[in-house]
Length: 260
Image 1: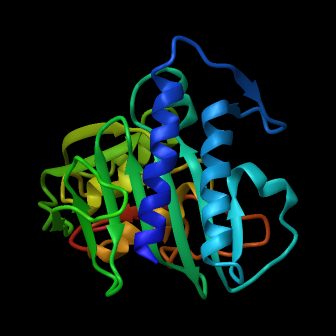
Image 2: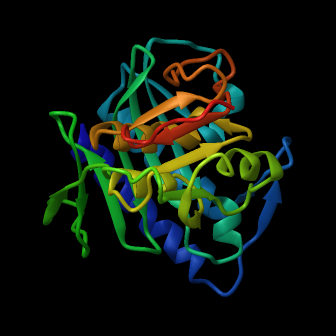
């Protein structure tokens, strides 16, 4: 499964970068006021076609086709073909291709590819997560390094937060911790930074959808991390009626969590 997910993410990434590197591209606004570009739509077409061919019996949920989804299943593939569209539009590079496999509410396999940053993370068949070094060949997996979360120092935590969605509620919650360094990142890269030990905790006090988080969640799970609901600290689950997430916290297990 990871070889199919990985190859499709790389193909979609090539198309995204082709549009990203062009002089100009059109930006449209969806019904929920979020932006969408030709890159979102082209990546969605590449990934959807490939997944339907490879896994015809598995329910496929993608952000760009989310309005058409009426089916429900305990097990499904969920895709955000271009997570971080605002980062893409502003040419900030912090955008990703996300593909995940959810089993009984838990994202167990995932690929996160950041084509502008040459970073590729995926879970393997045994559930562990690796980062692959560039350059990436579509047919063959290159040099990979197992990744794992940090052993956090609670007197000097490394916090990562959203680049485009920071607000006072997020800052208030971060203020409960002893923070040594604060970085901002777009898209699902925030999960990956915790998975590699580059950050310890990522609180999200804002709206997200399951396709935004499932692949990063799988990558973090495979590196020993956790994602929990912000309100009651129970595990964040998938397959909710409208695919909308509650607020959540992604973290390395050594972090001494604070209540909201």
